[in-house]
Length: 197
Image 1 (cartoon, helix red, strand yellow):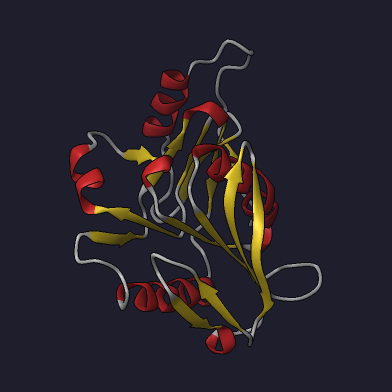
Image 2 (cartoon, rainbow, N blue to C red):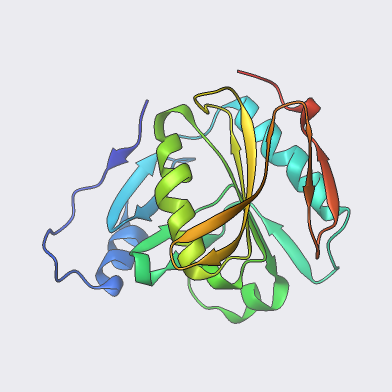
């Protein structure tokens, strides 16, 4: 099942607060992800088991190198008002004080040290294009895209050095190869444990 678009008022004059209000009031089935992607409120079904397995393995490795006062959040809303975006990444590494200081249901994406997205078949292009541009615009220093559905086969791409809406590719590997996250993580991910399919 693909992502569903939630009906909302149209027009170029939509304000960020109106989008967030629609997002907050969306009546999604339990487990579904509600996001704002390029000004459109969307709902996606829960990810499959392999998706969740990959996210947990990356999360476990991240916790082995993080400072005590940083967390790896699985359902943390990250806002990018300039791109009319409010994403729920699979993993967001954010300092605890940011999460505790922000009121509401999301933090500014710019506070994230690393964002990890694992693609789903139905909406992989959002992670590859719209979200990559949004995270870059927000200045998230590192964006890790685990693309199970890449056209040339499952691959992982680490993006960094954001400028405007664009990242530079720091490293790209196929499933089975190692990927190195730079400082402040200095972590080698063995992607050989990621199931293909």
